[in-house]
Length: 325
Image (cartoon, rainbow, N blue to C red; front, side):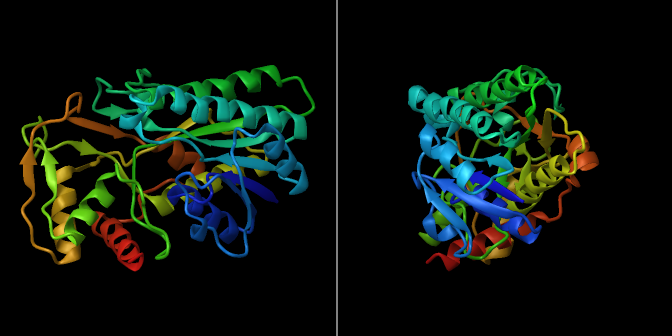
């Protein structure tokens, strides 16, 4: 079966592409390379360069490659920057998703796995987030992902009595780290792991933003999940759809307990062999003490589990970054 991966040249998307191939499914990548890297796409995988906003291209590639389902990873993923670029964020994430759904309906493609985000929850007032936790996104990015989930829901209702009723699920995840392929690394300038790696490679000292939070060591606690595990969950959702088994409207891909920023820094020093004491900076406005999600539903349906220790997550990410030169 052929599955199209939007954003398949990106850090997460290219891992999904590899996981699909390893599962015996045929991936086709659609990516405009605005943040993706062409070399992240394996040579034996069909690659269409173009935008998800190009309605004609999206539908044509679905038909030409006889696509049975879509894993929609493409999007503008910078929550902080989205505050300054709300219109761009909505164009890419909301209009892009609408175009994909419209093209799928025209081409008779009825399965979609949507890469959503834990940003839909905003700053929850509970220490452990579940799927039903109230959604209060705090950025245009989080809002756009929540609207994407609504689009899937509404299209499923609209097509329920048709010949091709939409089957969908949204996977929400938090901080994606590490690497499952030494040739692929996180290129985002906004994520913790690449920020620390670049500091260490430049001989500079990484910084912790605040150490007076109500946590065990005073630093923020978050979910950190390995990109390889995230990719496997996307493929498991696709396989469940292929088998005709029911899926939930959304799954949280969480760790259940989380890691603190200081624990991450300690692992960075252990794994890299670079002894450093992080600088302590001021808190960032709006940063909650702890946000951790349970992954129980995903464990039940998608074989979701934390397969990597914090040291393994750091080591795989560090090796991939150093391989990049």
